[in-house]
Amino acid sequence: MSIRLYVGNLPKELERQELAALFAEFDETLTTKIITDRKTGKCRGFGFVTVKSEEQADQVIEKFDGFLFKETPLKIERAQPREKGSEEGDEAAPAASNSNRKKNNSKAKKAAATTEPESVQPDPRWAQELEKLKELLSTQTANS
Image (cartoon, rainbow, N blue to C red; front, side, top):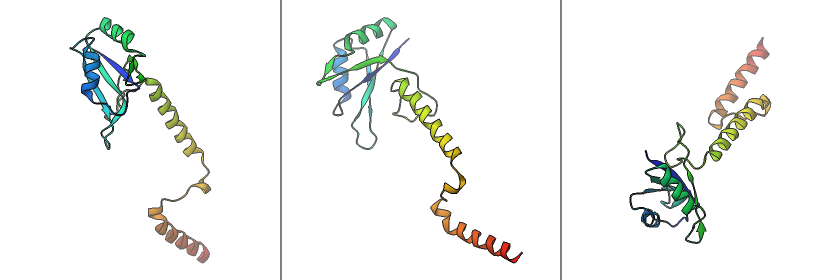
């Protein structure tokens, strides 16, 4: 059974081969993946290493967590499972950030639901049509 490890605090200028070479010193059978920005192609600061067993995962975490790589200490931990509906590349930075994202989304929904109707602005694409409807309604009520 393979275990996926999250590797955080990676430098922006990093190639997959460099990360693979670092972990190849430990075991050449490890696989690596760097998560890159779609627009720039640069590393987003994290990636993943897949190991073959629990024991090997523990050894990699023990050896490389805090290891200085290109002058930055690496953060190694077991990767959290991906959530359904998450975008490719937003794989699983630690679960804490995912739970914070959920909390922020629910707060935004609550705030939108509790705003007063007077403060809601119409969609600019429909503003002219809305004004026409308001005029028609006011003329109908004035004629009644």
